[in-house]
Length: 225
Image 1 (cartoon, rainbow, N blue to C red):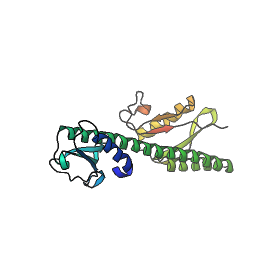
Image 2: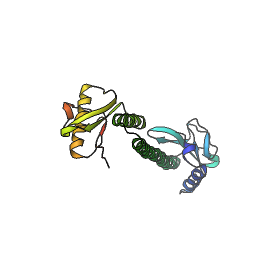
Image 3: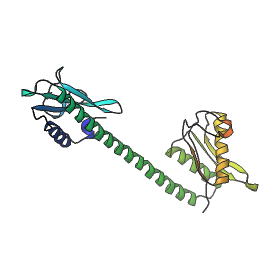
Image 4: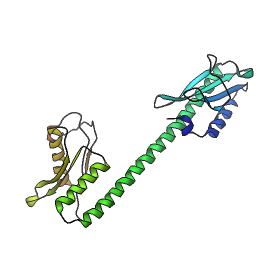
């Protein structure tokens, strides 16, 4: 992730000016460098052993550097320069993290929108088709493309309330995973409530005898309106 793509240069310049004006009011030159050492904002400082440098990190990976010099002509560094560089780095890292989270939220919202679109598309297909096995096959195949998932199936209540698998696509990782999925489907058929098991989640009451780290499984009821 590039720092100059996450943050506006004018905002960085205003931050550098504000930090440089903090007491003590002796000359302090500040700059923000990219990972390769190029100046993104601030004074044209060439980083050296005398520079106060602080990494601007995002998820523990440096995406830039805050650089500070103090003294006439911008030469030399001391405790004030160290503190200024650390402050600038911390503020910019926090802002960059916020921008990254906003981008992630936008991606998640787009995914939710695509899921809603999928539901409308499924509704149109289902309302136009008449053959029950074909309806189930179309629904499973479209869901597998949208999520995506390794396998999926639809089970319907048959005579006597027995749950019968109408269609299945893909393959389960192990027989235990298949038994777990079948038990989840049976529970959902009884409770009418969806069940989501996250990947790696420890199951207190493991379906089908599946213990330890579980794969992600989702089971939802089908309600006829």
